[in-house]
Image (tube, rainbow over all chains, first blue to last red; front, side, top):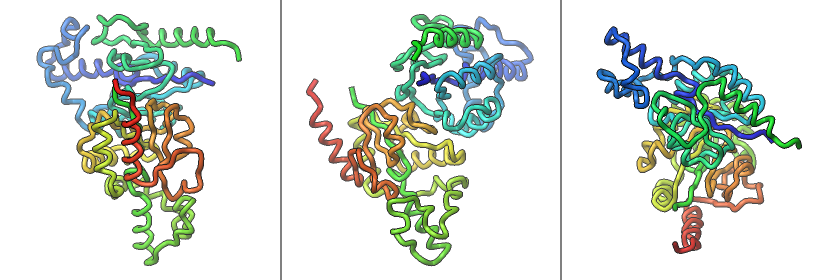
Length: 181
Length: 181
């Protein structure tokens, strides 16, 4: 039986920081200083305190870029594991339909049956969880994998995956270590 | 620590069959024969073969009635248990936002953090699952409770709860049987 993976969207598959940087440049004609947001939230950047409001706008989540390498590795994971996309969406009600369409556009090989839109991930049962938020990994019973994001670079205590190449390498090893049935 | 309940919406909290009956009466000026849908799907009723299409219409899930007694008992469950509303929504994309607003209107004491909109419930971890579909209970590790609906009256093998009064009685007993900590 394939092992189950709960895979987060925002800042794991979907690149929100790059969009925030673009919005900042549009507004101020200057690139934000990475020192102001690496290791913290982007809202720490002077002038970006209200950028969280963008998350509540219809269409914001529909139009975000995908991380390099993500689509190919997600497709590979989808053939070797029981994959679910588990994303916190309910805080931003418009994101529900936006995320649905984003997934259909960028990862068309994933069925709607594999989408999970939730608020609190403590209800998720899987063998692995890939997430950029430690608070989601803390309530998880399986193996929590921290996907590197600007805001979590100072976090310790979890296996860290820095990019999609590392995700593939990690899960290739997991498959090798599986007992032959 | 409170025990976790995964509570379904459609045909458990939300009364879809009554809406189907109203739609049938509107269309044909005659009440459908219960023999044609009790123990089966409503789509078995002659003339209602295409009623499933209603589920894809924007607003359909927004305007459905709540089952008698459900709101009070859900509020009671919410104080004594770690309650999540776990509903299959992704098959009907418009239902995502409709269900969000329905829950806010009818069960305003439930936070969006407690909403889970999914396709396949095999990813859910809880102590109890209340659902009208045996296929959801089959993949569940906790105690599955079958909520009676027209389409499941011939199912066996699960504790059956016939109405919201029985839900309350069942969980009152569960609380009594909890070891004192």
